[in-house]
Length: 516
Image 1 (cartoon, rainbow, N blue to C red):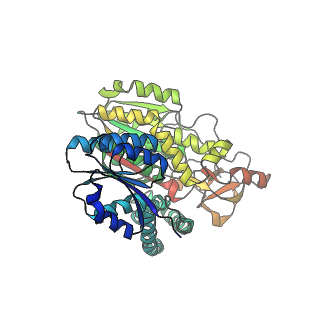
Image 2 (image 1 turned 90 degrees about the vertical axis):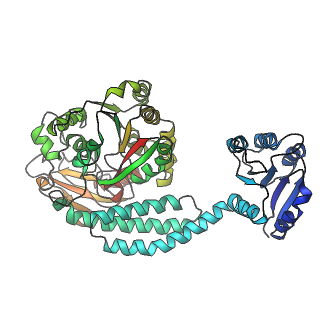
Image 3 (image 1 turned 60 degrees about the vertical axis):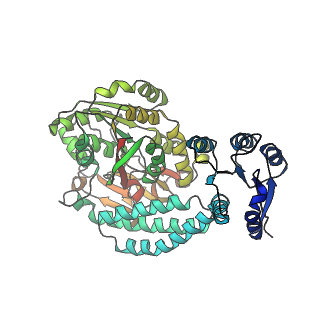
């Protein structure tokens, strides 16, 4: 038998509410009546109430004072304020004290019932509605997946899958999440086939998606003006689902003007994708035009040391009359310094901030047991991203940009995927080390697991030697060598990697915001 819901109703004219109380009792609610605030505060200590209905205007201590006392004792107890007055200050006080609901007298029994449903059955009702909505949508998504034949359709489908992943993550239904997971796996399988078939042609086609090397030209430079500054934030390794859960924080200070999904180039790795963003060139073009700035996989030294130089060359090539500054934040100290001194950027037409934390988080999951524990799956990984962002210098920088009246553009260079399955690969000793793509000579691999490009120039990638090729892993695979195979697989299984072909790595957001 289900436990009755315990309600405390506090009103100095409680006898006038007898019809309401009888109505609720007929619905199997248990009502404790009370005529003043002092007794109400004592009762809250004695009885485990599920919810309180509280009259604002009572003799003795007021409803607002009673509310404050109750919240100090039981911070999570929902309190519904009922008042005759529609004075704004009372509403503001009540809302500021985190009331669950606000009702104006005279209230009818159905209003009370609705408030109870909203506050006590809220999660169950949402869960049921979400589950039934996804069940209805599941079939449509499955049909759309089977028919998807354009990059626009893939963008739309991936956005839908992310939407349902975020909707379903807060409901207690493992079965539904399992169904979504299998649908995502199916989507990645079909997306891999789509990329394998079309990627090479897309790079030279007239009708093609925005790729890394055209991102600034397509979505950023057109928003720049001499009248006001723009802050461009590139968060390394930010997936669409992570971006979605950061949006509520951005919306406090900015209003979204437009949003695009664009495609990371292959490999979906920082040295390729981010250099392409800033240079406005594909990797083979960078190698040819700016050999002093470009390093191949097997070369010694940092691969992303000249992003500002690349950006400067792109601005010059496009004859843009803008002054810019570039900052790369790789640690907390640098972030804090920029946040403290951000007002000095107000004379810039464009301020670029590359923020590396999310990438460091994904790598830390591989190397640190505590991070493995904290980010066991995508939901936990998202939760860590939120915790970082809301307390980060980056969020402070964004708030300062808003106060300066700057536009905000947020994007990333590529996403990441939780790798679950190993695929064997063999190559010469100077093969690249990345787990989601390989380049080098004499590569041997499982044909069905990869997109193989024997002539890198076909997809505008440099070759470290005449016989070098590239392979890109599909879905959630990672490459492992046969020697010490079991140890390697155990170490890297369930870690976040990038460089290959998946929806998570390739379809990534770029959003433009106006300050509020």
